[in-house]
Image 1 (cartoon, rainbow, N blue to C red):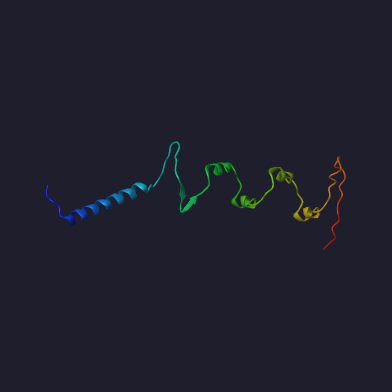
Image 2: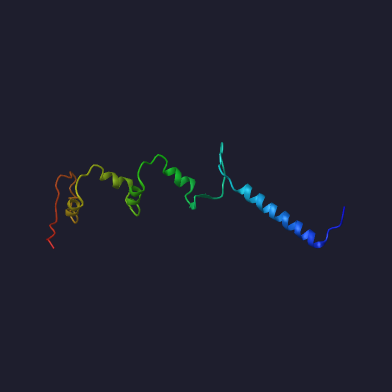
Length: 123
């Protein structure tokens, strides 16, 4: 075996490093990923968008058929499911509901038969 000059050693080390870098890049670039069973990953990016939802959050949406716009309507809503269900089937307009604002519905009336309204003067 012949002796190598230090510059030759440096050149060979540089080529080896370049080959390792190229191989690593090829190994890390997948054209398609098929997983049968479970896959455990630390993070997920689709396109250039990082997926930041947890699996639990994504599973909550499983089977939901609403649009993004419909979901965004609920952003900031603080009512309970029971409170929302009270409105199910109501056909009154917002203006009609606002007429009831400030009304006393006879909470002391155990039969719930009589409503008492407080008249608010027109502004």
